[in-house]
Image (cartoon, rainbow, N blue to C red; front, side):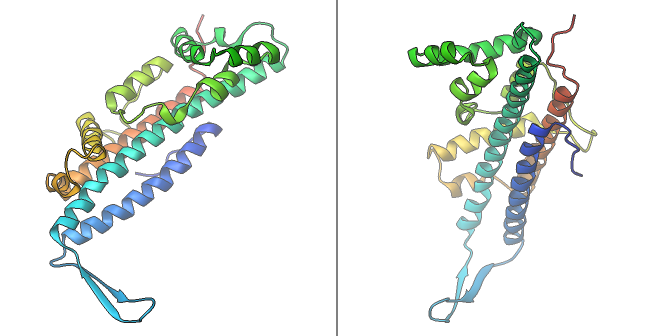
Length: 254
């Protein structure tokens, strides 16, 4: 799929990082696909110290391990990209809030936002009310989004190893945008693929199966399908959030 046009500055940074990671995974999948389609593949080369010729036969279990590692790569792509996208929303709102008060407006910026966003933001706001946090807010008159992003919003633990399509839909609902496939049927994604990626990532992360056992259940064709679903979903997320931010759909309508 061709590159998307991202107009929001904060989201563009996330998109550039996403495309870099996408290229890494695509290169990895090309390697695993090549190894699976070669009879008795092996690596050959020269020892950098002794200059002796050496070779390594790629055994079947190693190929299975390489296939199952795809789950980790795809899950990392989904979680890190969604985290960066949500961060772009908060950063955009933070920038607009600063501009709002710089224009000497006396009302609070947050009350111009949709109710669903206000609730979502204020829920996180409670986590910063330690004694030190309250003192800092009071003495420095910190803005809502500045305070949340700096004190109460930990993007590293935003999804915490449990992201799938259902959670992405729920996050979109809280902010008020909808994720739809781009250019169907080519841009379609299967929610079951995303759930399967999360499930198998957790199986591997918790040691419930060996990598070769997990890879034994994953064919090259299935791996390619899950990759396509992931890319199509995340492209749809970027398009939806960019439209949401550019059109300023986060504001409450009269």
